[in-house]
Image (cartoon, rainbow, N blue to C red; front, side):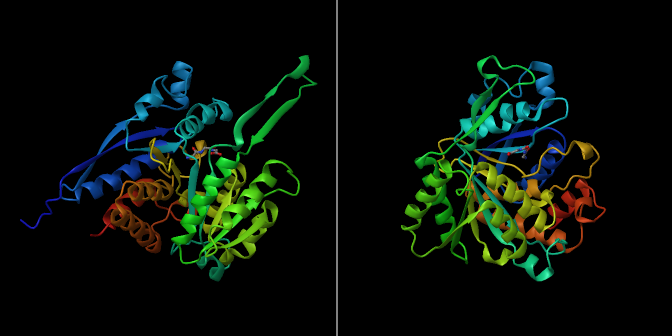
Length: 364
Ligand code: GGG
């Protein structure tokens, strides 16, 4: 009686906590999602399967993930990821062996990284400027500087004379699809603007192609304001004129750097959520906090779970549960406004306390 009778939909979610603080923040995201499901009166549920991959797995098996891992992940509705990296494994091995392997194999070509002001959080910006923070960085996530093209030890040159080449790959198709994604996103926002970022004055091939594709795509969106800004100037603009930005689209490396800067300006890298999307939905998309594994605080219960919980909200949106996503967003704002803050934000709360506060703030 009084209980909604919508049919139960069970979402199959793969959890990959991985390394460092990854398990702590992912447990928090799971607690929030499970609380929502428990409160849905049977309308939806999450069926979790956890994959114990990461640097520990690498030390035991020589692999960051199982050989059949991609095949198994393919069956899921979405992937929740923690963080990758541990000092005993070279960072390029752990990153390529797990996170990048999944992103590239599942063609998760759009990495969406929102940056916004949260009440009660101190920003290094002046208060009025901090309140204006409301951007989405759209990171091209399949090629660019992360194409993995290059090599070492050419023509017998050995130690002392070694040469390394690291190439960036830009395809017209890869640029165009991420730019169209950025423009469509801009059309859903109050400020319809897309800022494109390159270093095309110095990088005269790939980034000039990027600029040309941007100009062509922009012509299809006359209702959206545009600008093309060099990455060095954009870094200054993030700090000095943050109110001018809405959607920022950039290559893999540039967007990675800018989104860290953006989340630091919002108060902490620990706050930043992200979605690695395969917009065609041929493969599962992956949701993860922007931050890394933070080995220095791993296991201490200090990690800020808000980036992971915000990523879970992005997953809810992707799964077709926008009202539930909005509940999580409101809970995050209520918890920071109430001053329940982890150490990175100047507070004293631990991960568990923030998680409890988030669950208690979910409301109806
Ligand atoms: N949760 C994100 C994560 O684990 N990131 C690790 C990292 O170092 N990423 C580098 C990159 O994505 O560019």
